[in-house]
Amino acid sequence: MVTPDTPDLRGPLPCQRALFDIPREVAYLNCGYMSPLLNEVVETGQRAVARKAHPWTIATTDFFADIADARTLFAELLGVEGNDIALIPSVSYGMAIACANLPLRAGQRVLMLAEEFPSVIYPWQERAREVGAEAVLISRPPDDDWTGAVLAAIDDRTAVAAIPVCHWTDGGLLNVEKIGMRLREVGAALVIDATQSLGALPFDANRVQPDVLVAAAYKWLLGPYSIGFAYVAPRWQQGRPVEYNWIAREGSEDFTRLTSYREAFQPGARRYDVGEPSNFALMPMAVAALRRIHAWGVPRISMTLAGMTGEIAGRAAGLGLGAVPAPLRAPHYLGLRFPAGMPAGLGAQLASQHVYVSVRGSALRITPHLYNDGEDIDRLIRALSTALVTPASRKG
Image (tube, rainbow, N blue to C red; front, top):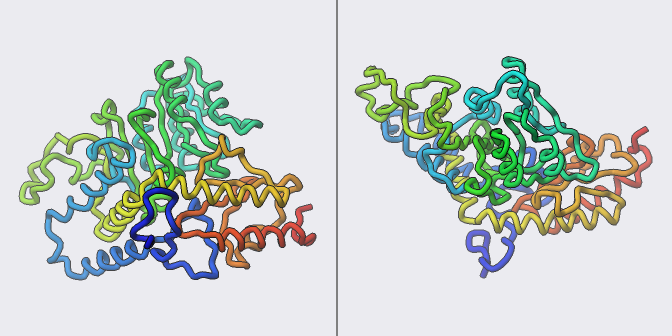
């Protein structure tokens, strides 16, 4: 018998709703906004918070155990080593690491996508202003081919491309491997925000070769808010951290010698860790979530979600709605488009029927996960059908 804990390894994963606390009447199709926590992650967090009530039970080795596990588990998603990973609180922090260490000179260009998430845009705009470089926002391509648009923008002036694996508004997919190859030809760096893809879409860092990759944990990594990860390629691991904290220094495991101040850092990317990375409440939760993702397997997660988004796209087409074509869209992502204009207040109208999605730009962003099933999809399509035939809800 197949259960959520013992899935059939031959095909898509069965629905995992039993592992989450989601009422049957709720159709939560909004993982791109924020994932719900697994029940086991909530229980891990409750135990972790309670532990601080008895600090005498927290040993010095506990400052390092969970963060070592987190590094390893995250690194395995990329196919790299644990010491290549820094622990960060946010995407903007990871971008600050990249801005502080990747070369950028006056007259050079940083390429980014128009309408991309602001935590990528703001750090690079500021860095470009500081050195007299140009921050370029590549316009949305009419044919939805973001890869072609980025490749066309790369030239000898390009120093950095700071891009996602898929666009956060509608899932438009970028071939980051091909883009990375072109960037290396002109001597430019590749910075990736994988927040909206890692954990739901396989990623091979050895093929893509990013210089820096960052991901927040609270979406497709199913973890808590304020925890994130940064991969820093070995060639940049001797750089300047955003902050200088004690735990990133060599020998910090020996609490009796913390006042023997040292110049040397911990190996690899660990010098870039945020202060207080041990985070006794949140880090165990992130570790539990990563272990569950590994148990499922990212390729099978991706396969399963592709089936859901494909079904939704097909049924939405019957309502006259469009989307980025499947070959140009991340399999776990769907941004529905309304040729006649999106009904005003559509997100709130759907939420009133306990169907939860996001409005991002001009798209209705639908991002399911393994806790969703056919009943959720049916509820979404019924709610959309109702909204589209309600004249009072139409814009204009």
